[in-house]
Image (tube, rainbow, N blue to C red; front, side):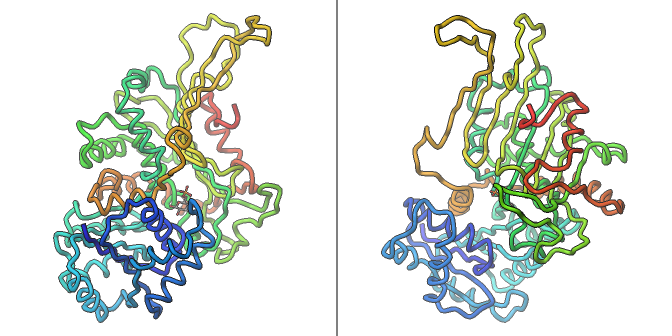
Length: 484
Ligand code: BG6
């Protein structure tokens, strides 16, 4: 299969950090279809060779299995081209159309890694020069708008030009191996299904913690915040994967239909729950791994009086027969105690305790997303001393480390998703109605914050966020995983 992948935003941060490394890894792993061409598009003027040299220099600082040799990079670089374009005007699109028509590849992918303000213009201009053909796929990077109205406006334009089956909305969390394993765990095994419901599960916790601050993205982040950046998309997609009913088959729409039902069943916010069940925080100065780091308000590009949240913890419920009454907690933030994304499924205690032992962390399933991905099943077992004499029951941990089990070749989220786009597989992409429903659900939070002059609670960098987050979960008689 021949393909042309046009990367709008080809000299942007995402291209350097994630997309080019992912394409290179796919090339190295031999999974990139042969006969491909990757065309970076940007505003600067670069020859193909200058663009290749830029990418090679950026590869010094990105995550790859190992550095490419000169020869290996040269073979990859042969796929790379550069096209200067001003995306906001119409004058440069006919040239792009010509370049693509001359080659007439089987599949053309338009990857929009640009500011979302440009999405509709780019799609309209592609249509104006006849580039909305049936073999075209369009990939949209987040953020897709900054609220429901702007998200809808983008979706309406895009879906007026391309059919839904041609639109690949990226949520890179869906490309993480652990998330696919969550689908496998739930729908490929009968073991957990009878337990996966309100009768047996006490609560579910989703944590996406980062050690990094806003880095060089202060100006972007200050108008975005953690709710839009992480909760509306990544965290809610994880919640859907945990809460959805078994789909009727493994096709994209069957899966997306079920995820949509979860989003529609989330408990609507009330003025009271917007106060009691949502905590926002902002990092102050502190220490990460023993090194002093500055507070958010002194980061480059950030307003010194900013009220933007870098931390969110919230409590919700899925109002249906399977889940009614089970709290789902979401927590995400920057400059937290560790880089750690995981899900904890806490099962209910046994109906009657016959052993006199502290169950500690037992009776739970942990799904680790990163830094390593795998499963931990925590059980109570009969303890023994080193002469074999029985002791009290003790918590034990059964580990399934997917990296160890399946060998060293790790397929990163972007690599996986880019290959799925080339294959035309939509399972791990988000449909417009899902996205809109997620915006609809977070909007009352955004509005409540806007009306509240108090702003976020400060937390010291290197901690687990404001103490109100622990207090929120403690109110239900539970605690976050690192506190147990
Ligand atoms: C992105 C957010 O979507 O996800 C970033 O915009 C965040 O702010 C990143 O750092 C986290 O992704 P990962 O894969 O490193 O957990």
